[in-house]
Length: 189
View 1 (tube, helix red, strand yellow):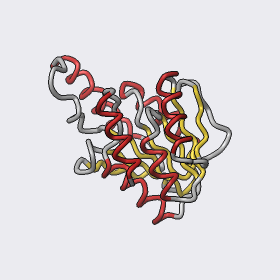
View 2 (cartoon, rainbow, N blue to C red):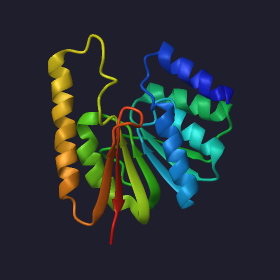
View 3 (cartoon, rainbow, N blue to C red):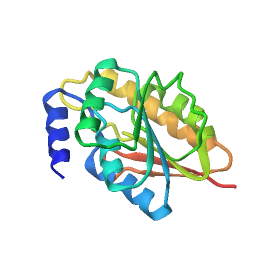
View 4 (cartoon, rainbow, N blue to C red):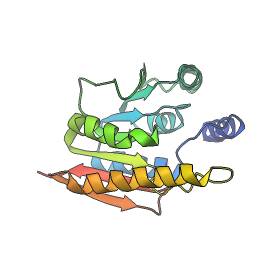
């Protein structure tokens, strides 16, 4: 898995936020356990998560990224590692609306839009599918981040969790011990 080291090193050198490895491994476990066939990623960055899952599973992946430079960098890495089951979409996630439904949707994009993304993409989830939202704890906001910014994002996440609790016909869990905290949402009919 040398590709993981290269992608992590690139992310570190270029200050690109990527999911923590235990989050990606959790997604991989969900795919294998539930025999998921389709995966939608909101927020590609350098395609770390998608490449990992593509190389570990026979799964169809769609990943959406709005930043052109990140899109191009991800494309280079996808081609380098021959992760041929990844389809990239260059578009803002708030405008992208897929025609298909997905077994697993991973939201790891602009945190201030997580509630919007959840509401938008919940409709795109298969009946047995799962949505995972990353960075619920916000521990990755360290260092020189102004306290007001951290408080703003804490309030955004609190509002997200409160709204998740109000959504009918779903089951949810908050797993703060995985990565920087994740929210897991499943439909329950």
